[in-house]
Length: 336
Ligand SMILES: Cc1cc2nc3c(=O)[nH]c(=O)nc-3n(C[C@H](O)[C@H](O)[C@H](O)COP(=O)(O)OP(=O)(O)OC[C@H]3O[C@@H](n4cnc5c(N)ncnc54)[C@H](O)[C@@H]3O)c2cc1C
Image (tube, rainbow, N blue to C red; front, side, top):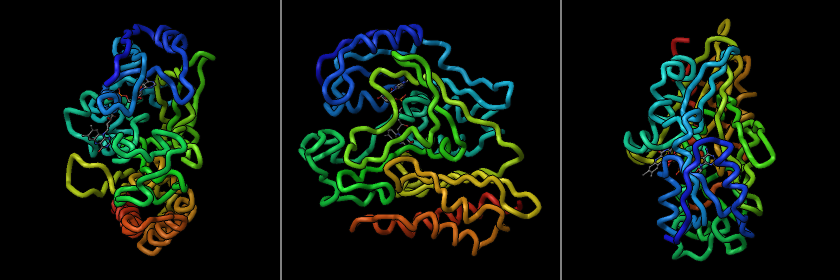
């Protein structure tokens, strides 16, 4: 771990001002905000993250609230702990898929520390990214190559991969937020802006080190989740190597309405298989307006995975993801 300066900020304005005053290195920012620290501190100990300046934002009280808005949407502060969010009464009743996704991840202790923004920005678990003993990692050292493509890549991505990176986005919570069409609100040196979660995560392409739409020094202040137009069925299903404390091999978040025996306003996202949390637009098209049933679900799963680009060790994920989606759709619509 390298030496770094630690500062505490008491307001978003102060946090952004401190971050803006830190000079930016050629590759990536040299300033990082620390929230729960469950991801950043790990990576600092491994020397994968080497910020010169760490800004502790834990004492900004306004960022730790969950508030229902007059239009029915939910405003979730960046510092809301994952446990508090999962057990929040509004979340449990309005967005059970979000609660289920959070509770399927990590451990109770980690969820008590981890925050909304920290989860959105957690970095990949690719072992070649995490271990400096491997020189080749385009995400860590642009232009160095990708050790995973010729190495062990059983847990890696099959959607959104490039010749430069096949690392999977590891989050569960963000898959649910993708299906719920959340918006991420940011404050930076140039002011405030809102970014739809569909535009937030970048594909690796030729720049795997650029992971999202944030500028260096941008602070996530909160996330908003729009209220559904009607009563929805919601399910998060996660498949993994062991029943708890394990990242997804594949997962599916389903949000849908069933009106007059037909599926309406279907939103599907999947995790564990993409280089970012993956919205399944083709599956949604295949489901919209149809009567729920096995053949419709199988057609949607085929559509969802038609662009999968597996490598040798992770080809099994294509079939596993299809089965996961069919099962999640069945769970969501049973007794509809
Ligand atoms: C053993 C283990 C198992 C896990 N299993 C799972 C799992 O199954 N599923 C899952 O989804 N996750 C899992 N996680 C990941 C865990 O959910 C994340 O570590 C956690 O959500 C990160 O939140 P944090 O608040 O601790 O982030 P931090 O470590 O504080 O920060 C992470 C990143 O976000 C940035 N950041 C934080 N807040 C802000 C802000 N407001 N604005 C701008 N930047 C910000 C930091 O600078 C840093 O880059 C696991 C973690 C561990 C260690």
